Length: 319
Image (tube, rainbow, N blue to C red; front, side, top):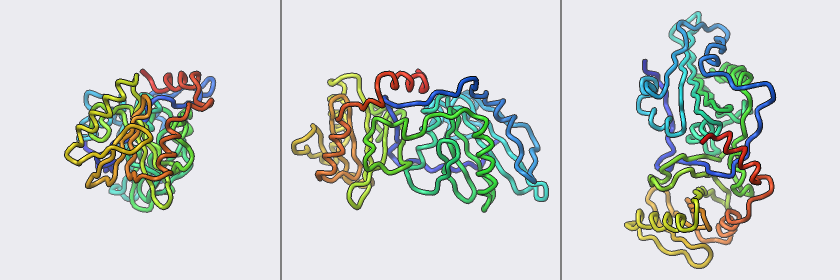
């Protein structure tokens, strides 16, 4: 069974979140449904009917549902996926399809959703956030990532369906809460992302948080990876420099240790070590505004992201 799913990759830079997230508690007395229970509970949209039961896939056979995408899904923590399909009563050729992925944690659900949405496009207040188009609605809710697809001009039907699905899943943290330790000033709304591993194609850059920022008349993208200690961060800076040595990296004057280089596709890229963190700014040009952004990354963790909140996030994000 192969579906016509079409996804927008995040080019060569996968995005990601790290430590310091803030999560909300699940309402008392309400737990998340299992994926099979959730799939069974979704009713057909008006004037449509289901001609077969939901198909459930686990990590062993996930490739049968999304061949070519299973590895990426599992890197974000996907443990199971359900595919559903409804056909229109008057026209069996017209279909609405749903892909519901149990990503294991709210962070995993946000991550797989966020990889293709960076503040552009249209959004709706469905669940924590939903990206919408004329024939698709995507959103993360708790530990689930949901993608609804239909014919052109089916957005109203899909949005209503999304609302009924959201009502059956306890709420999770909002995207901005998952990256609460990133600077908030100048951040482009709905641009937050999480990259579980291999950011910029480098396997030593894992658990990366990212967001887009408005600086003057242009946007830059900020990526932050945290390391267990200072030597690890210094080693990552050196590894990054070695990986791009053919692009003539130049040391940055003053401020934080780091360098910049020119990438044919990404443009100017700056890489900086900020204590135990590595900060990468895509679209980086030397300016007081860029320096101010780096200084905000270096600022002490605000009270709202205290150790107690970090513990809650760790519990929500899983091991």
